[in-house]
Length: 349
Image (cartoon, rainbow, N blue to C red; front, side, top):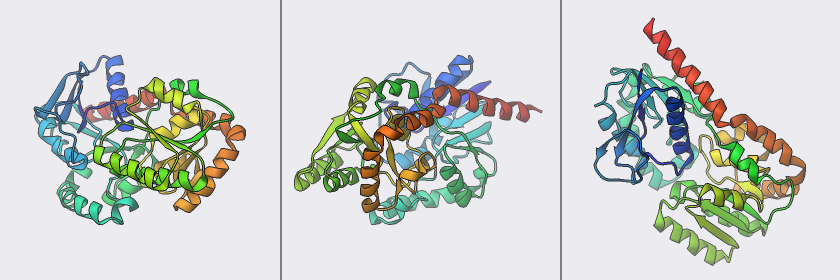
């Protein structure tokens, strides 16, 4: 068996990247021959067999890179294509095509209300129309029921749901059942994460906040700093933190706030729960499946839920930890491998 791991941008700086690297680890543990296809050259050397289309790193236009990675993936004949872009690029004619990922990034509310996102998404949506045929051939594995339902609306397909892996064992080390000084948000520093909501919420509820994330968009970061100054909000940023640094920050948090509406899952939500924190998450997101009682639709609702999460930290901490334990990396690797091998064996019959 030869597997082609298709990912538009090979990086371990995000939740999606953690899924990709966990899957690569799964293949290594089972001595599977594999190669990784990306659109551009990875920023870092991961000592992996990587094939790319652009001979330099390119980080812009994330959604379009998910289409263009086809240019490198199609050149490598494989038994199985494990596609982590979430996009049905045409690979089924070359081998078994398994797509793992989240909801289409343009079929959620956050992209339908902004003129900027409408203009950005228009060519992408046109391109998706030409990929309809692939949706009837590929196998879809969704990272949440939210994603599965969105794919069903978009493509008319039924997806298998396998929740993504989370390094809960590491984040158990940050567990605390009471106390905490600030609201915690974890996300890449980029416009689509809507981190201004964390700043606004912290200002309104009067509780300091810490935003931890990989700096992806410097211009947006400067806008956040400007908003912080304008509101005189008590906000701290921890950029490009290591896992150990993140764990230390978690130890002093009182609750978690997830500002990204329409996100298909949200691995940091589970990471925070492993630390005993009560997360407040958008109703329109995959994370709402995990903790439905602490969801919000408006910022005003979020303020009320954050106050509740702050109060209930001590009484809910062990419950949060117990829920988080169900999302381990070992569980993901076993569940995903069984799905892959069943598809492979059935295809040989």
